[in-house]
Length: 124
Image (cartoon, rainbow, N blue to C red; front, side):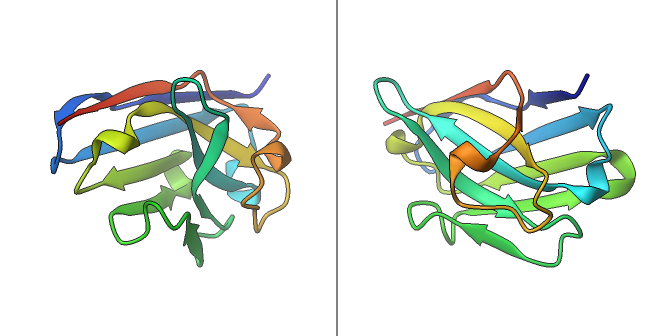
């Protein structure tokens, strides 16, 4: 059974930084596109950032472009999200997700496997 385990969430002041990590197990990690998705209270799940199976291309939502950076280390079955210049509107539960399409998607429904999530709270 596939497991995706996120870590690194927490409480930070506006303008601060956090780095999220996700470790995958029981998954041919290097064959999957990976993404970070989020859900704010009372809102639907939202695509944040994605990365190709080989790490050669990344893509972001307009709301985080220039502030967040996604990366992956296939040898460690790990995907990272570096979040800088955080804003209160970034407050959400953040999920790591895997897509069998090696190039991924901006559509949250395309991601077959999800982690349990890690909470990020940004205070003003």
